[in-house]
Length: 405
Image 1 (cartoon, rainbow, N blue to C red):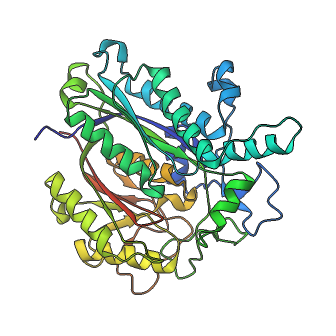
Image 2: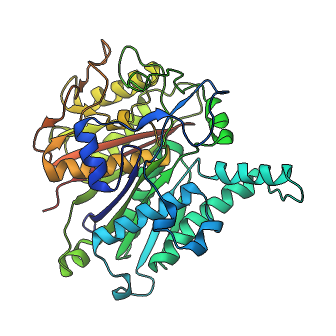
């Protein structure tokens, strides 16, 4: 079996920081990005808070010819993908013609385009396409524009597995590299902070209606009452280890293991499917549970879902045996972008030897049995971290990131 691919570039667009280092500094300082929605008037909705990416001027990053062809989420994705490629220092022109590809994920991004089509329908001479066409358009433009912009003519894919999408996209990229592709740009930037998108999210029944930003999203807490929606995410550059070594690339870590499982459709998924994904990812990485230094949790913010995630973690590692953290408490849940952003945070934890804390949570709810990092970041050597994600409908994913030697 070939060596695990390494990560040589990270690009982030997050509600608490535009740019990788800006996001990371804000996360370690506990500065959140959850605030009243500003992109439209939310007064007619029960949910009025969200995590919006600050300071993003699309015209400063995106060629003017692309602005009419793209929506807000595609522009954020182009920004994060550009940042990851620049960070890696890779020159795709030096690779074989089909030696670099892209693997992206999204589950909410088509809503804004769909709303635009509805508004066109209402206006005189308007044009309308179906919801299916709206989402197909978004995925094609999102992945296609990224691949065209960076000359990524190799394998290309767009996955839709809700919150698990970011891990699944990286898992797919990992598979392509092990099959012989030299470089893959992978991850996800997602969100639907528009009236149509928010209406769709409300149907899940999992959104918090709390109007205080520091009380709205409290994963694993007794007071948990749902999650706050957000936008953003991250892209990572994965490379074949030998290729990265030959060009002297700086390496953040390696994607040592990945696994995905699916739970039968049910209102509240149990712990078994997620625990099975964890064990498979660890086995693929050749890693024992006691070698894992931290778990970056899915952190649904719904008491029953938090409880089953904690059960999965304790089933594999034991009670309070490994630190667990959820830095997304500062950003809200970013759908397919959230897991990709957690992967970036795990790699930065390995680089800097510090675990971000779960902001605004004083302690985990009684009986969960997890060592939740709260109050402030925890200084600790991180050689190996596990990132978890669960998507609405039964998707589970787990990825092992490890210091590269």
